[in-house]
Image 1 (tube, one colour):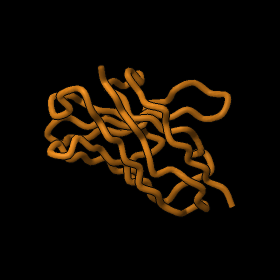
Image 2 (spheres, helix red, strand yellow):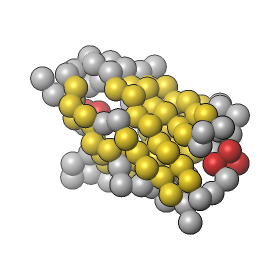
Image 3 (cartoon, rainbow, N blue to C red):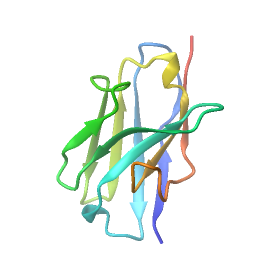
Image 4 (cartoon, helix red, strand yellow):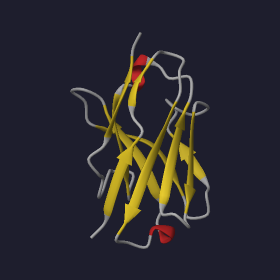
Length: 114
């Protein structure tokens, strides 16, 4: 079955940057549109962005211009470069095989705080 493992989270000050990674296995990664979703404390899942198999991207308005998704199909890996982080970006970030968070992994915590 699908396995996704997120990494790269941490504590960062406002205005800082982080790069998240998602390692995929047990499915044909290169055939899938992949997504990042996040969940802030006490909130539901929020779609962050998606990337097609050939690298076309789309983002939520809340992160557009600050976050960039990429993928390496030869290494079954996806990335989320997050720049100019804000406190409201604090959440657990998940990679998933759908915009609703299907098959997401255990997530990686991102905390933006001074």
